[in-house]
Image (cartoon, rainbow, N blue to C red; front, top):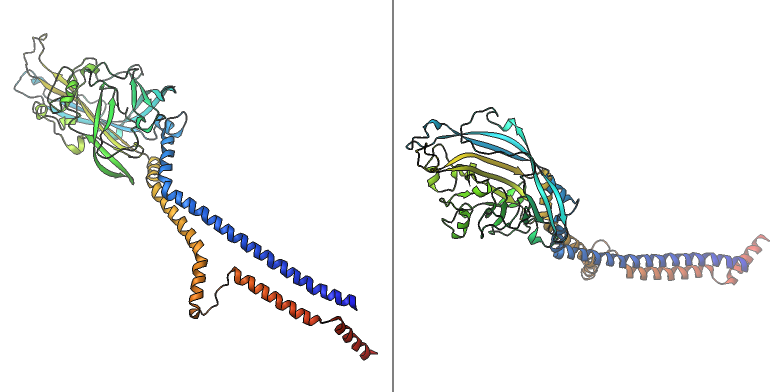
Length: 480
């Protein structure tokens, strides 16, 4: 009988111990989850703080590193072979009264013919990487395909003009060699020219204006500032040009800075004395640039189409030209953070300077004029992929700060929820119709209380050993 009582006690007490172990495991699990929640909250708060405060600086460092020209990186591959082509429209000036040229009282009359459309496929051939000064040497190669759909007329059209050298062969012999900074030595030098044909100056322009400086065209320095001009070097003209800030514009959802040519660019010293060295021996009124020494000593002058922004002197000596700003003004739109080209229109006109010659006595005509020959309209618009990347770059700081604030808010809500809930339930219990959930301390107290009550009940049920003996003894008497 004692053995039976011990078995019953062991059964009930083992159940009690199992319940005690289960409750202890539950308490440990809750404690672990509580501290895990605190650690995760602190981690999220740290990430949120970094995104909110330091994301801009960190992303700028990353971007500056990614924009550097390096062998086989994505920026270099796109720079070598851009993902968009350039459309080139060519307009010619047909000289309609050439038979009256010897009459000095009659002005030359011109009729614009075109456009003749071409698609330019740009490509660059890398010659050498210079790790000693972080520069890159390369050739520009251009391939043009005739575009009949954009052409008004045909390639068989007859044009009357001055017989000047306007073409050259398709080899790289006449193409200059450029050497630019890769950006590894600092963002301020990124994409800037160091040498052209192995020289840091040109022999075709007098000292003071002959420095090789600025961008070669495709890459501009990063972190552009408003109202600061940007500088380009055009090897075909053997000189540098400045473009002035014009306005902020949106292109395909990307904010860009629009630049245009100012009066200083096409001045030969008439308005800006520092430009007098660009006269190169022949100073004409403002609005044209002398590139004679850069064009095999042929008397070529560059202007904007139809003498836009030039002195009235030039347009007054010919007929048939009408400058329209919307059609003839060049511009370029750059993404200010990366300096990448979003859109541009390169427009310029080639003219030949005519003047009397003592070697040609058969021409009594003594007048001087700029004879318009041809003008070009090159256009490029960034690709959909480039627009998407630039939108991401411009909006990264906003979205990262928004995410950081969200993480901080979630963290504060998680950490403050229990204290706020407990405070509210303690001070305003009369307003609650449904019992509030107990916290961990209340749960522990209830478990201890229930455990004590269960133990007392089971001890009362079992009683002393004599009670069990008496009970079974009484049963024995009944069945005896």
